[in-house]
Image (cartoon, rainbow, N blue to C red; front, side, top):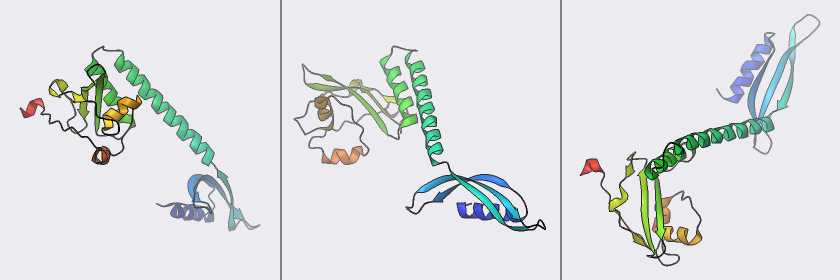
Length: 193
């Protein structure tokens, strides 16, 4: 039911003498949603006939925002707690990255996670972890060749290494199209060999 139907249904209840409270969403003159609680009671004449309705509308938008913020913080705390528990169970790097992958899955919509290490003496980028949501399990990176650091402005990963800041690419394929240097690696899963 949409909000208008809910309000009409509640008005019918008041016409039959029933008082109640309910939450709904209204749209203000700026087109913004306003979360409200409506408390309505029938208004009667001296013969106890319902001749109208008396209502109080309370704006609870800020309350809703606060509740959403608290729920988000609780969710993030639970995720961090779960991550901490997973990380404390092992020193195995692959198991830790698998745990990171699983935790990130609950927070962000993404398709792949790549973790690389930069060997500054050799100026080579070596992948130490790869996993895709599609395959479900991590990819053995032992056969993935090291990649030379690309010239400034020519490679996504090389730029990340130079800036020493992690990035999130919302559209990796689109970013890759604009990249001046690309390295394609074909990896077969064990069950495909």
